[in-house]
Length: 412
Image (tube, rainbow, N blue to C red; front, side, top):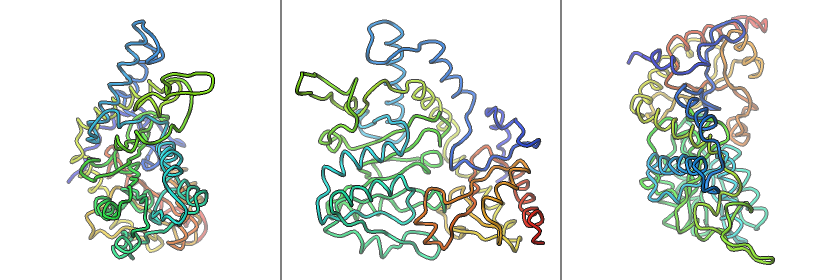
C-alpha cells in the first residue's frame, strides 16, 4: 500500500510548521497525537459560543453546555460499544481513571492475602496504583512476563491467574513494544476464577476498533490526547454493577444528592464520579476527535501504520548500529511503534541529534521502568507512527539516524 497521508496532513496545522529550521517529522504519537482543525474548532466553538457550567443552570448557555457534555458521553459509549452511557465516566486522563479504580474499587475489595496480577509491560499508571493497593491491603502482586518476541507468556497467563487472583490489570497495546495483547483471553481466564479485569486502552483506542463488551473488560481506561482530542480529558468505562457498588473517588460539587451537616448521599452514576466543574471544552473536542476517526475508519489507519512499519524495518535493519525491540514482523499484532537504540549512544543524545534534524522521537524509560529492566535496558528511543505520517517521514528519520554516530564521533 502506498501511504496517501498527505491528504490528511492538511487537517493538522502543526505539521506544516518547521522544527529547528526544518520541516517537522513528528514521530511521538504514542505520547500525544497532533490535533485536527475540526477538533480545534469544536473546542473554540464551545468557549466562544456557549461557555457555561453544565448541569447547574436553567439558562440557555448552561443547557447547551450540558448538551455538549452529555452528547460526548453518548458518543464515547458508541465508540467503545459500552452498554449504557452511565458506564462512561469522564476523567482528566487515563492515569486518573486507573487511580480511580485502584482507590475506589481496589482498596474496597482487595483483602489481605489476595493476589493482583499485572503484566511486566504495563505503563506506570497501570502498575504503581496496584503496588499501592497491594502494599496497603497486604495483597500479593504477581507479574505475567514475556516470550522472547515480546508477547505475553501464554504459560504465565494460565498459571499466574489462580483462585487467589482478585484483579488482573493488562494493557491492550504496549506503549514500548507496540504489541497487541490478548486481552479477551486474559479476561476469560480472570473471569473463570472470579477476578475483575482492568484494561488500559491508552495505546489502542486511537489505532483500532475497541468493543468493551466483546473483550468483556470490567474496566477500561484511555486518554483523549492520544486520539486527536485535547489534553485534560480522559475516559473510564466500568460495568454498571461494579461502579454502582464503588464509593466516590473525589468529593464535592455535582457528585452529591443531598448534604446534611453530618451526612451526605451521593448522586447516581455517572455523576457520583465526576466531582466539580467538568472539562466541557475537552468533551467537545473528544466528540470531534471520535467523529474524525470514525470517518477515516480504523481499517485505513491500520493499513497506513502497517505500511510505515513494513517500509521502515528493512531500512533500519540495514543499519548495523541499530538495535530493535519487539519488531518481529512475522507477527500480525504489531502496531505503529518501533522501539530502538543506537549502539554506544544514550537515547537522550539520539533524540537530541534527531531533533536538530527536525525529527521528534521519544527517549527514556517511557514510564515503563520494570519493562526496561526486563529488556536489559535503562532507556530506549521510540518512534510511533500515526495515519498522517508518510514514507518521506521514515526516510528523513533514517537519514537522521545515520548522522547520530557521526556526530558522536563513533564512525559508521
